[in-house]
Length: 210
Image 1 (cartoon, one colour):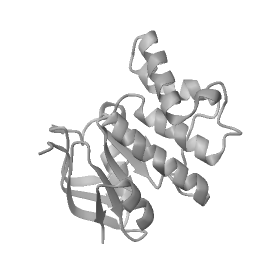
Image 2 (cartoon, helix red, strand yellow):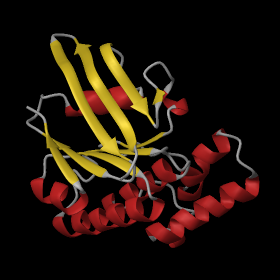
Image 3 (cartoon, rainbow, N blue to C red):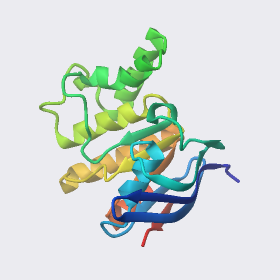
Image 4 (tube, rainbow, N blue to C red):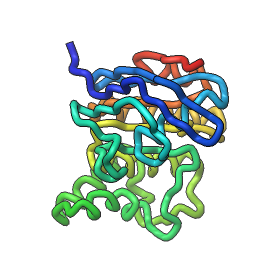
């Protein structure tokens, strides 16, 4: 039986008048969980809280691989995030996007290059390494964002409506890439989505928030 990787224990978050109250969830190591629910129920608020991008947590615990992370800054949590708006660095090439995290964390130069080129090959970005984000297609930009999120070999990968805005062909293509990379990297994943089709295609388990 797999170890539990992520534990959300009665997490309560207050954002203005909105309160996400005592939400609990456990995700096993290597499991991909899709989080669904109506707009405004708190899916993105919860994910941003887990990633350390949202203040306002007033109760509960967040344990990642047995470590309480609620008080840690985002970069120290061991989490990779692919946000809905992709948020690539506008002036960095694809290679630099993939190398950004490992360089920031002091990896050896050879390790940084090897990791970036390995991800580029797996994600089909080999021919785009010297390109900047302007001019990339929506599918290409999301593959770069996925590679950047995976570059530091995170313990948890968070995907926040990461396929929004893609046409059907690109949507299905990137969805297959995400599923392949989750399996290849052996990473635990939490995927926020409105799409039941998407959830069923990518997730081992679907959790619906009310």
